[in-house]
Image (spheres, rainbow, N blue to C red):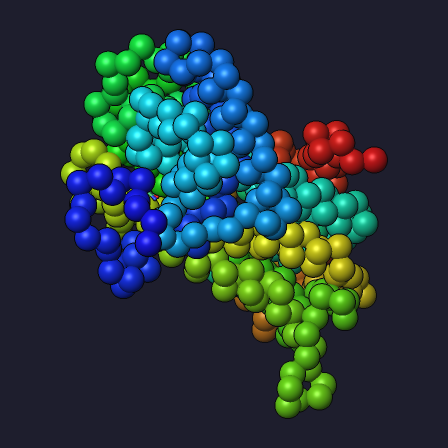
Length: 457
Ligand code: ARG
C-alpha cells in the first residue's frame, strides 16, 4: 500500500472499510479543473515570493497541464486510496515531476484548497444556471408572441376570477425567473472572495501574497479572516437556497401546465414529442416532463435541507463533515438545469386550444369586477349591487351581458346603456389599463420590454 500524503505519524494504514467510507474522490473529481486552476495560481505566487524556484514553478505548471489533459482524455486513474481530488492530483503530480511537486503544498491546506475549489465551481455553476434561465425566459416570451390577444380565465383559489391575456400570465413567469437569475448573481458576487492562503485555519507565517492568488483566480479580494475562510459554507447555502426558489417556481409552472393539459381544462395540447404513454392504457398521453419538473423540485429543496442540517452543529473551524457539502450542491445544480431545460422544451412544444378556451370563457362571471368599477359609486355598494346582479344571472341561468337594462335598473338606477361596453370578457380585459395590468396596451408594453431585454428578434 502507498504511504498517505499525511502518513508520517501513522504506524498502520487505514482499513478498507474506513478508506471506502471516508473517500470523496468518487464525486469531488468533478472539481479537477478548479483544483488545477487554484494550484497553478498558488505555485506562481510561491515562485514570485521566492518560496519556490522558477524552475520548480515551471515543472509544477507543466505537470498540472499534463494532468488536466490526461483527465480530459479519460486516461487519468483516480485512486480511492488517495482519498480526494486534491491528493489525487498532488500525488499524481509528484509521480510525474518528482521533487518540485512536493513544494506545492507550502502555505496551503486542503481546508483552504477545498473552499477555493468549491467557490470557483459554484461561480461557474451559477453562470450555467443563469444561461438556462435566459433560455426558458426566451421560450416563454416566444410562446407569448405566438398567442397574441388570446384571453384566458384568470383564477384565484382555482376558481374563475377575472379574464387575463395569456401573454400576461406567461410574462408573470418570466418576471419570477428574472428575480431568480438576480438572486444567483447576488450570490455569486458574495461568494467571490478567496480563501486561499488561510491554510488549515490560522493563516501562515510564510511570506505569501494572498492578493496575488485572489487576483489570478478572478476573486474580488482575499477573505479577511482565515478561520471564517475555511469553516463557513454559507455561500453554498445561499446558492442552494436560490436554486430551491427556482425549483419552486418551476414546480408551479409544471402544476399549471399539467392542469392545462387535462381534459377538464383542455387549454393546451402538448406535442407527442414532449409526452409519454401508459404501459396499460392505450389511449393515454401524459405530460410527464412537467410532472417530473414538479417532482424534482423536492430533491432540490432536499439538497438545501441536507446542507442546512450539515452545517448547523459544527464548531469552528473545518470539520470533516463539510466533505458532505458537495454531493447536494452537484445534485441541486444538475437537477435545476435539467428542470429549466425541459421546461423550455415543453414551452416550445405546446399549442393553445383557442377555440376551446373561447367557448369556455363566458362561464364564471369574469366581468363582474369590471362591472362593479363601472358603477362609479362607493365600491362596497357597487360590490353588493353586482353581487345581486350575479345572483339574478344564476337564477335566470344567463351571463351578465344577457341581463336587460330593465333587469339591471331594478337593482340600481346608475346602470345605463353604456354598461354593455363593460361586459363580456373582451370588453372587460380592455378596461384594465393601469400600470402592470392585463389590458392589451399594458401587456404590449411588457412584451416590448422583454423582447428587447432578452434580445429576441
Ligand atoms: N475532501 C475534503 C473535503 O471535501 C478536503 C479537506 C480535507 N481536510 C482535512 N483536514 N481532512 O472537505
